[in-house]
Amino acid sequence: MKERFEWINSWCDETLNADLPRVLLVGDSITLGYQDKVRQRLKGICYVDFIATSYAVDTKFYNELISKFAKDSDYKLIHFNHGLHGQHMSKRKYKSGVKKLTEKLSKNAKIVLATSTIVYEEGNVRLDRVWTKKLKERNDSVREIAENFGYPVDDLYAVSVNVPTDSRSMDGTHYTDAGYEIFAAAVAESISANLK
Image: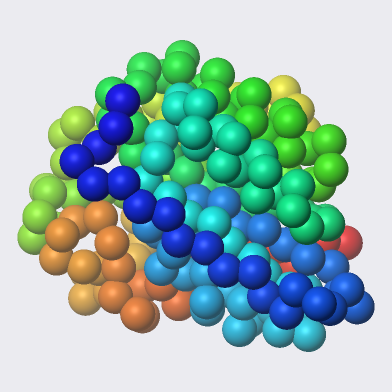
C-alpha cells in the first residue's frame, strides 16, 4: 500500500576510495535528518552512505531497492532504522518484512537495528495515539529480531524520549538541527562500537 507521497533520497560518499570501511544507513526521514551529521562525526573512521525512503518494508519495490543498493558497494556495516512508514502494517507483517530483509543483508555486512523514534501529535503536547501503539509493536519486533539473530540494537526510541521540546519540529515527528545532532551522536557511537 502506498502513501499519498512517496520519496527516495540517497548519497554515496567518496565512492572511489576504499581505504576506510564503508557503512550504509538505511532508514526514513529521521535517517535523512541525521545522515550528514553522522558522516561528519565519523570522518576519517569510515565512509557513510545512506538511503532513506517513505516506501514501506512490506512492498516488493522497497525490498528490491534496499537489497540492490546494499549490493552496489562493499559495506562492512548496515545501520537499519525504518519504522515510521507503512502505518497499515500489522506487527506480524512489519516483523516479517524487517526479518527477511535484514537476514538477506546480513550475508554481506554486519547489521545494527535501530528502534524507531517517538511520535507526538502536531505541537508536541500529546503522544500520537495510533503511532504510540505501532511504535511499541515495531520496537518490540526490532528487539525480538535482534535477539534471535544476534544483531546489536541502537535504541533511538530511548534517545528520542529525552530530546528537549525546543529541539523537536512542531509536526510532532521530526527534529530541529539540534535534535538531529543528538541522534547523530548516538548513531555515530553505535557504528564506532560495532565496526570493531
